[in-house]
Image 1 (cartoon, rainbow, N blue to C red):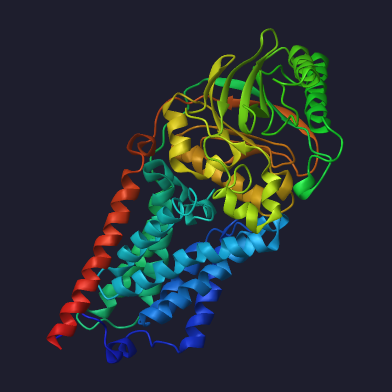
Image 2: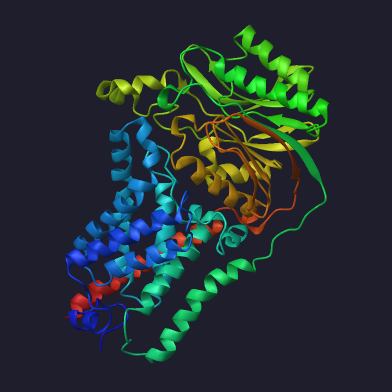
Length: 520
């Protein structure tokens, strides 16, 4: 009799879900990838995520390992090509190269998934492997690229509540588990268990997972608020030339919106803010180095009468720079600051610089090489200590968490999406802020040069947002929360547990397959 660890024979595969031929498997994988894309903003059909996982699992069920790798790679391409289409303003070659590399992780996931599908409780192991795949993508290559994780399709869904328990990895796990359970429902009659009980139990489990997400306990309101003014100044150019040809336009745009806010406060149409936030790159001139930039910012701060968090790119020595959020006081000028720690490869610095400069002249567009900061972004501003997060950093779990642990509340995301305006990047980034709000019980305020600037409550709901490619401003009453969620306390522990479970299941499946061959 075949043990739980032995490879499924052709007969047993036919007795469960009939294994389709290669074209049908490929089609199921591609459709699954497209469904995953539709789960992400701007479509935001979150329920497509578990359906996409289910189709991918069905496409792999009973496949040979080499074929599984190609099926997984095809599913990755079908998902990532449209999901990462926002990279195209940099160049189609950069977009295709990124998707091609990231899809390799899907090929690895597919091979491991086929192995663990030979075990009992395989939906659990497949979901663990999905977390392992996302963990690996967040580390390699060149610092990782944790974009397009399943969790980031669930900015506001029944699964979002799991973020308060185990962060983004637990949300990805629960979505993948639901999809794998749905796939198990159509695999057919088990040989050793009564089919009716197994089907009923699997169906109930698939429903119970998202329902449990709705009842995850979360910290309540603490009765304290801060008024935050948000400035979106817009930019003169588009794409890679978003700064335009005339210097200081971006800076003047943000200063002008701040003066307009000050006028509205004096007229009584807006309440006076406690602090004001400008976006990343809101000044296109280094205010430490340029007297005109310093004067423009100082004038805006004095007019509004409260500290401004200014986003600047500042010179560090003769060859380097830093992406910095500077607290600009109306009386004393520039003070405390936060330097971005998670830098964008090929955008803020060039990995393997000599090699890429030799291969492409476009690598020279980076200019001065950015250097990363060395401390979390907890900055005292007026009555609160904000948690400063710069743009790309919102995708990294640990970077946001240690900002919260350093005392940052509320979180302030300064972002510059000008090169990617009207692509799917701004709404995807907003969904990440929604998840972070629930994960850490913190309100999130996003200030963007061209949009989407927004306010997200600690419950993950968007309370206010701007359009794109327009100037705008507003003053928001933002709750100040200090209680920590379970996710904030335990950090990466749930992720490590799930990754190790997936790795252990893979080892067990390989061992079972080897033992089965020896007995044969």
